[in-house]
Amino acid sequence: MPFKILIAEDEEITLKHLIHSLMQEGYDVTGTASGQDAFEKLKDGSFDVLITDIKMPGINGIELLEKAKEAAPDLAVIIITGFGSVSSAVEAMRKGAYDYITKPFELDEIVIKVKQLCEQKTLKKENTALRTFLGIDKKVSIIAKSKSMNDILSLAENIKGSDCNVLLTGETGVGKSLLAKIIHFTSKRQNMPFLSVNCATFTEELLASELFGHERGAFTGAMRTKQGLVEIADTGTLFLDEIAEMTPNLQAKLLKVIEDGEFFRVGGTRPIHVDVRFIAATNQHVRTAIASGKFREDLYYRLNVMEIFIPPLRERPDDIAPLSEYFLQKHIPKSNKKIKGLTKEAMNILKDYSFPGNVRELENIIERAIILEKSNFITSESLPQGIRAFHIETIDPHNIKSLDDLSKEYAERVIELFGGNKSKAADALGISRTSLWRILKEDETADTG
Image 1 (cartoon, one colour):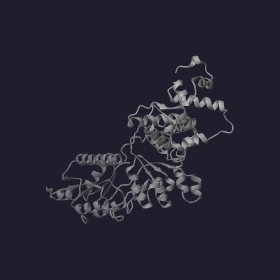
Image 2 (image 1 turned 90 degrees about the vertical axis):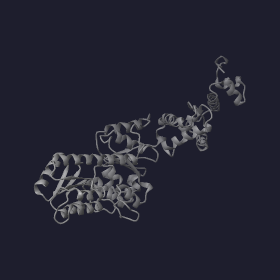
Image 3 (image 1 turned 120 degrees about the horizontal axis):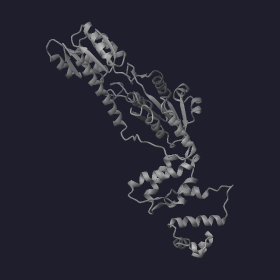
Image 4 (image 1 turned 180 degrees about the vertical axis):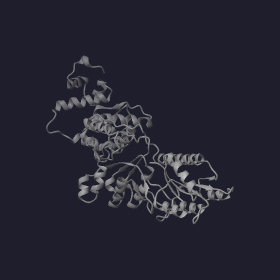
């Protein structure tokens, strides 16, 4: 979106040349010969730069500067002054002007100043986004072995050339925020800001301020004008997590941004235009939320250009082993331990668990196990008691094992625990090596312990 420039200059020929030169550079330029008219335009529209002559009938340049900075503190102002004196320009600088230029001037001179100013504003905006969400790794990836997750990643790959809004659905902890980052960082907006907000963590008033910003004096404690996430995310992507928790009033304001590309700051009177891609997520059943009046149907259809459902971890058990290994490698460096992996028993327990907290819960379990584990492998003893109990109590009526099979399976797990040493395993089980061999149905020649 081009920078918007307002020029207030009562000399007709100078105004005409300025408008022409700046439009040639690709800027969106509006001109007027009156300070009062310029102020009215500032109140009605959103501008990035004001260029104003000091000497004008009615409201002069200094007065326009004061009114403009009060109405739009982020507005950059360049003063044009003449009469061979810079005293008035110095006064303007003290009142918040960005720069000044004296008459007569070359058009290239003011074009260069405007270009430098717009570059600074762009950099400031990018830095604001970076400071707000520093730490986002652009090299994000999803660990997926199951067919369902690979289908989702293929879909994300297919829409990387599109700029459509996306709605992500699925239970808490399945990885919706991670998928949102992948969609952004593989899109044509990948070098633009990626911002996110959890709509469930704010009251309506605070969320409105967080999303849309506020003007100075909009409410008690609003000591200065604040940009909101929608404004900072301009040209980039805004991820709205738990969007169904947003109140209907805020949903209506968000709908206007999506449909018209403009919004008002809290307490503001002038529209601000933005170009933002929205990715939203919810763990609720959307149709139920719409039927109950909690979620606007028109907003749903605006966001649901592409809907992606992420299944719970219990429905994709093939992902448990690679995810466990990934989280193990992620958290081991912080532990100063040399854990090589998980025992077969520990992995079987994880695969039998239902994971109500999904991938997020699995990561917590692995991180906890690393802290507790004293051997070179994560054992069942390092897993939460509730998970171990679940595994013990779970019996498949269609696949009941014989006592001989259970004895052999348990013996194999004990052997694995002792690194394959059958002699130590037999001692731990309280049986002779011959009894252990009989359980395993192996010959004495197979003993390597």
